[in-house]
Image (cartoon, rainbow, N blue to C red; front, side, top):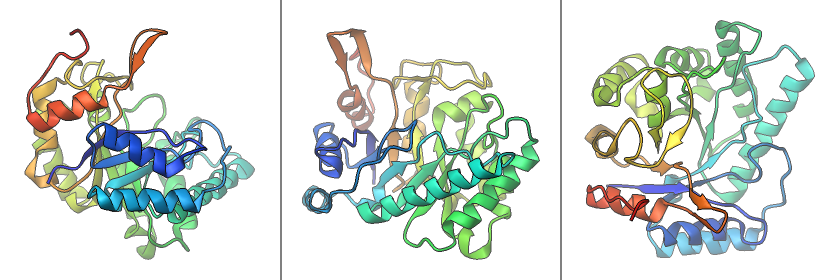
Length: 295
């Protein structure tokens, strides 16, 4: 079964209900959102009436809550504990995001593992595992999905070995609460040609287990393989290309896993800016490229 959706907007007046309505307008049966700004800790209270209406609308349109994802804000950095107060702040805020997921009845939270900055990669891996062990100790009902990263700067998570290193250090009761979110742009930029995606999956399965993959971000890339950058391109308009991305989406080893578009909005000028997701989802369902940007 294909579960396909996109990043959507969680705004104060409509909250989760607005997310579901926006997703339906794109033809989605999955979605992803931030519960507030992705660059700050500012959060407004969850409106339970809007939440309940959203879940009713999801039910009426056959959207399973397990195919819906929250993305943690970028400011959380569990890889660097050089400032103990700041590290504890990241853990505390992360725990609040987990509680917001529970309050919204969403079961998956994607997390960028973090950057080790002036520490070592090994330090970063240990710190991430330590932070997850603390944050997830008393949390039930929410999976944390570590995102595979592009390797920009001192990011942790741009290799299968990085993610394995984190997972291996998790406490037994926490390990079952942690999965992985792949990202096709990040995999490309980290050094894997997407044409070799099955080889990538073979290595992932042998080191971590393919059952840990619980979400995939579907993005083309403006960059060449191994560029260690992170600039998403629209579906079929980047260096990865339409056919390779379609092969990832319809790979039978990853059936029934939500696939989420994080491709950029089309911005021709200040008065002509719009989301591409309806067109990209239609292309994905039809398995046929359409040059919707230049039409």
